[in-house]
Length: 288
Image 1 (cartoon, rainbow, N blue to C red):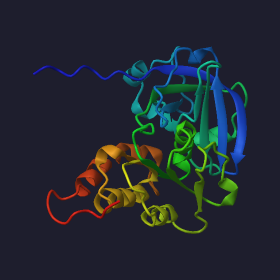
Image 2: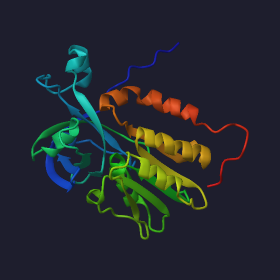
Image 3: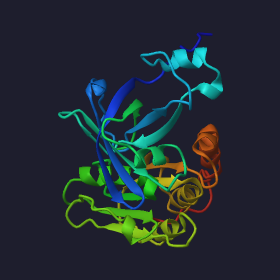
């Protein structure tokens, strides 16, 4: 049997903060630049993402950083931590990378760091990855998510050509968390205000209550895992939408840290997919 080649770490870039902006009470925008981003590029995916890499507290690594070397020479508890974020925008001409952060006080690692970031602060970045962009052959598009999916939804809307039929739903805490987004003519973002309701409840209610247009849909649905699971069941089993027309995954899970969720995310998604496959025979799914 041929051995599978060792998996290589993604490219590591070193950038610096060149701009900061508070978009809403709980959303901070940072723009990264510098010579360390030379060679960075995205593939056109509107859900392109990077991993921001943070050193373990009190630990110094040999320069220049080599993630594979660090993992080989340092105990696991001293490895850097990383957090995955959507590329809100990449300006290849200026060599500047824009990332939006959800911030809830001192909760988490990357959010508090972003809230306190200053011009010139360094950050190391792995990536990018990605795999979704609006299908130009689709008859209409469904975009749905919470704050964590807002940067990707906004990027997708900005790439939609005029005349595109889009239903976009974004669940946020309240009116103060709404943002101005460039959209094709006639497309309005449906802002869903969570208030004191459970995370994802308003989003599930809006999508399941939507009167689906005729034709082939291209859907992007991301956010809290339990909400995404419910929406996937609805889209696959009740609406009968083929898997290849869906980009759907839990970006995070209520009650779990980022590390804990990433440790089980692949297995969890695989299990949900197995559970929610339409039967090979039986009643026809409800028409979209």
